[in-house]
Amino acid sequence: MPPGQRVVEHFPVLDLGHRPTIRPEDWRLEVSGLVERPGTLDLDALRGLGEVERTLDVHCVTGWSRLGLRWRGVPLARVLEAVGPRPEAQHATAHGADGYSANLPLAVLRREDALLAWAVDGEPLPREHGGPVRLVVASRYFWKSVKWVTALELHAEDRPGFWEQRGYHNDGDPWKEERYG
Image 1 (spheres, rainbow, N blue to C red):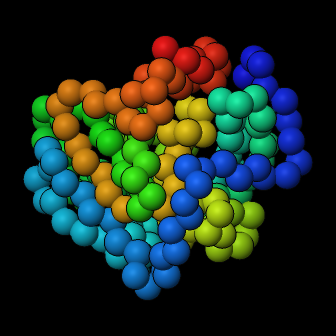
Image 2: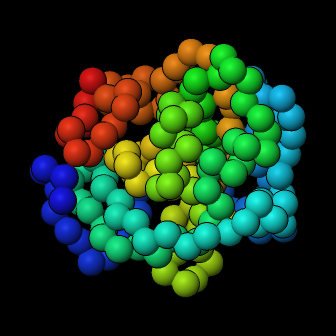
């Protein structure tokens, strides 16, 4: 367990107060910026990149941790491979349908614990947890795991996301307790 965290058995719901409704057949991910092959993926195209199941712990900056969640989705590394980041691309901003965003280094998105997930614990991802598809980056505090993800923009420089602009730590590593900047 990272320092300052407590285990919970339920799965708390935190958001900006707006929960978009996106039908799975309408969901799209636009990938843009410093990529060789920009474009848009629907859920079938995303699944076609090869789905996996990963058991991952998630840690919220507010102090709760949920252990052993089984996520089903596609590794972000496969999405990045499909679009071909240009050499100068070092960072990404993930955008949600609710106007939320989070910044992450591409090196973090290439890790095994970074997924675009559509199921948790054997069930389709519920709307309140970002369904139909959310970003899951288990090596960072959960605010980096954008719900209702609809866009991934690659760029050379780091661009702070929603909470980073409001004083949260830029990296958000729970093992280093990088809660606030």
